[in-house]
Length: 80
Image 1 (cartoon, rainbow, N blue to C red):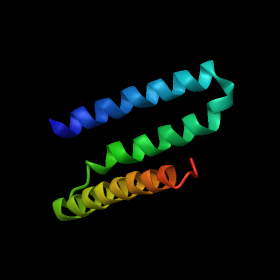
Image 2: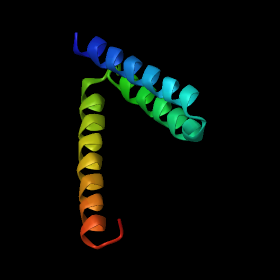
Image 3: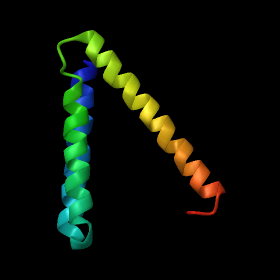
Image 4: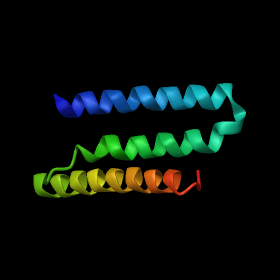
């Protein structure tokens, strides 16, 4: 059930990205990149090997934490 919900959420976000692409021509590259990332992230949950899926999920979690930390440091340092 969780896999289907994640896939459905990914489809919804892809539709939103495509609507933004059509409505605002200046964000075409970002919309295409975002749609591609969402496709990959949505399909990761269909991995057969549970151990590999767990490693991918943990890597994604630590990547998100690192990005938040980098943003906070850049904001605190006056770069953003």
